[in-house]
Image 1 (tube, rainbow, N blue to C red):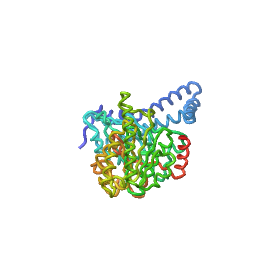
Image 2: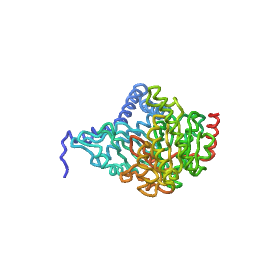
Image 3: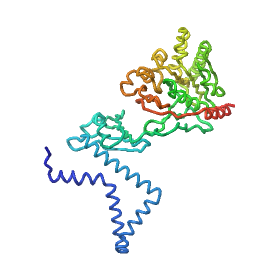
Image 4: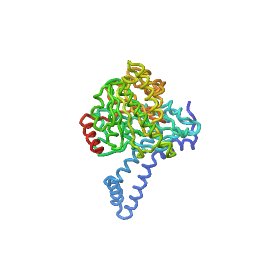
Length: 431
């Protein structure tokens, strides 16, 4: 059955709507027509042909105008494709409205859009037809997320390509830096849309987990490198293998190995330093330290399982109690915990301790439960499952930052020569 079109509805359907979607191109043709008319008055047929050609050549040659024209053409083409895909997906309302693009931005993997759904529709309607929209657009995937501040606004990712395909290790942006501050956002990874992701360390604790060879040590080295390039940062380390943090020894304030008594004593010393800072805050009538008022202490633990699930259950219980205390009270004292483990489990990372970690990075895990141990219960069922990461892709994981949803990322990489160079610069800064 087909609806019988009136003259007005046919005019709207076949003339007005297509003309509006092609408005930029029609406006450009109108400008060229005006230029041709001016050329006709000056030089006749020759002017009518040459004048528009001269304008087109100038626009194409001048870099600024060429970029603007190319961006306008791409944006117009994207909006026409979006209009067609929404109509084929059945997202029109009874008054012929569809979700409209408010802002668009090109990224390495495709396009990122801010879309507003019309009255009578919801973001869930758009999310439910995302697969159909992707099929009409002929792209890899369309992801839809609701804006937390405004119900009719959606954030849409149009994934056209894999930004990591064929790419080697990602070079850390600060690898050649002479000096940095850990108070600044630290470049950590690139998300699956090809955009860089940075994390803020002051006031946050960080948990990294994954199976061996998944890339967790590479992610941990980025945090250590940022602290090494800050001459006012202190690095307190716990390394069960001894060698993992060995390269960073020249820039470390304290380092404990595989002796549980030494590890516990170092935790107690850290708590004493935390209490001393709170005494200073109390005397000053303050509630927290701000970056720059005291050295940020980075408490780094590699192979957390050795300490938190040690065969000496009494020592492990004491270590966990101290570590949880630092996580609970260290934020305002400028103490940031960063812990890495290659066997995520409830016995290795107690949930009461994990829930105090605002930043979590789950690299490839062997089971869904292990993934949930890092990201939180139910995350694997919601689609954020680190056990589904390809075993051949090192450095890929799910990053869960405070106040959002996990996103798939690939961490930057530092080889041993990069680390030695950064350590040498960090030691010189501290000297």
